[in-house]
Length: 118
Image (tube, rainbow, N blue to C red; front, side, top):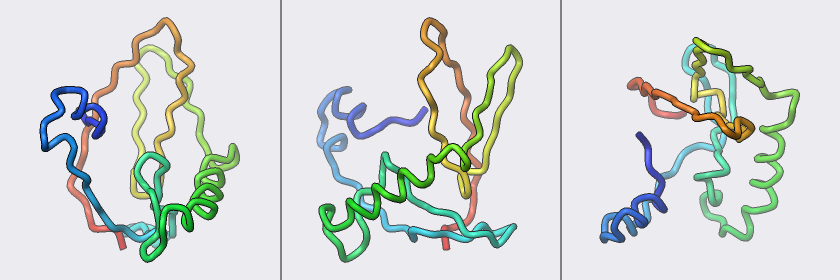
């Protein structure tokens, strides 16, 4: 189970939950097996570019966030009983759509050890 910072704050407001975690990654990374380049940004976690403020970064980040979710770059999975889906997070963005009202979404996540983005 993964939890956001907001989840941790809600669960008790402990000092650990309010820490700001900083991580630096390349904006474009190369897939180690295919050699293809992919955007390595995420609307939920990427806030700015190195050496730029959030305000300076916002226009370009917003353009890239919109670009990566264009229909021609997406795969819409139609769930059925017994369906199984998996993707490679090194070149794919998981962008779920909440269109299953009245149904419970059950997921089991497996995370494999991998390489460092480059």
